[in-house]
Image 1 (cartoon, rainbow, N blue to C red):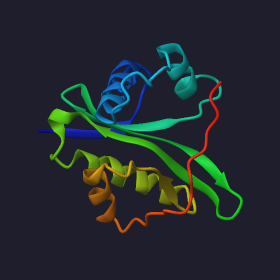
Image 2: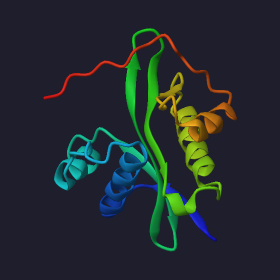
Image 3: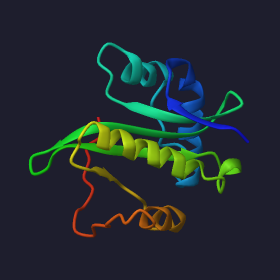
Length: 149
């Protein structure tokens, strides 16, 4: 199997949105994905993009993605925020997640960000185990807060 890791292109967006919906189902929230294709494309490839992504391409099919953006910490400066790393269920266990994660880490270091942060659901043991292999630290002190509009 030939796995190509590359930056996402606008034509990848339909497959990326499919992966996002697959993740939402896995995370037991299939009806929570409300972003539409136009918003998704504009947010990634419009005049003021807010996200970037790497994709794992196998024979022209997107089987994984790492979607991220830059956040600013008043204590640490610029940090890469990993919104989602997704590998389609049928392709898990082939090292694709590692390739995507490594490429994201590489970009973070090349841009000289102060670090990389993300969230993981407390019940998602496979993801927790994956991140532990990288020496990630887990913070039990902060609480997620949001407002919906």
